Image (cartoon, rainbow, N blue to C red):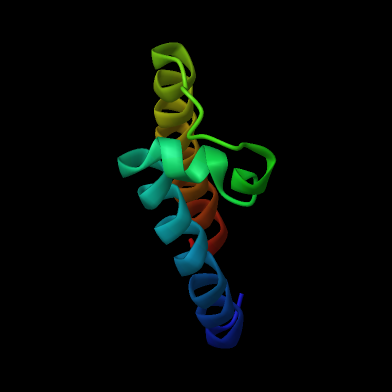
Length: 73
């Protein structure tokens, strides 16, 4: 890979990292993103769903990091 490919890879991966970090810290909001119009009141999200969303965000961050590091080096 040349330097331009690495630059583009990093530039396009930064928004994904930000989205995954925000998903970890605000799982309820990320689960309802684009779906709030379907509910008249604020829906109750179970603790299991919140825990699953946080775990999925962490696993995605780790996998994305591994993929990026292996592609760069």
